[in-house]
Image (cartoon, protein in one colour):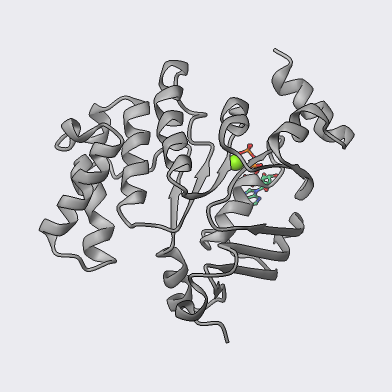
Length: 254
Ligand SMILES: Nc1ncnc2c1ncn2[C@@H]1O[C@H](COP(=O)(O)OP(=O)(O)OP(=O)(O)O)[C@@H](O)[C@H]1O
Ligand SMILES: [Mg+2]
């Protein structure tokens, strides 16, 4: 059996093998194989409904899969709640719609899991929260509520909140697609910085500039399958499959 202690410092960060998932009769993920090395940055793109969110949500068991293996930081995913909690401790997630708690201040949002999941003393949790809020340049808003912040500011808080748990890997599900154009850059800047610091990142995004700047690999999904994966340069300049070519012509064509 793989123990977290034995394998945490070597081997891939995420290993997905022959992953299959159904929603009822609908086969949403088909034979997905994906290995993410430590420090690797992967961008996942593809048409709406292709299974991108479902795939990354399987990594921290926000969605349950029916077949195949998922191993995160050496820990094999099972139905066991303790196992799932163990995996989630390594994985930070940022959603399209921020998912901050509206009735809690920015600071409280960042402290909650540290206090309740990690059992940290409040003072220590607040110090960590302030450290990451500084990092995303929003410490001066710590006592505000999410509803008093712009979308870009809320998303930066959501990133800080995830980082407070000191994850080994960060999952991003279209973190900028709900934002007004002028706020996209401030969130992407934080993500680029995180990438340069060596964070392992799995990002669903259609921000192709971001993909070109930081991704080690770009993955194209369609109808529940990985159709193509390549480093950004060959992905954008020489896409092999017709489906990838069509998709790129649609999103880069205007
Ligand atoms: N809870 C659910 N029950 C049934 N079907 C679902 C459920 N969640 C998603 N689906 C279906 O699974 C497919 C994949 O959904 P998913 O959200 O993973 O796609 P996506 O690639 O992230 O799309 P988008 O770009 O629109 O976010 C879609 O056809 C969707 O309708
Ligand atoms: Mg999605």
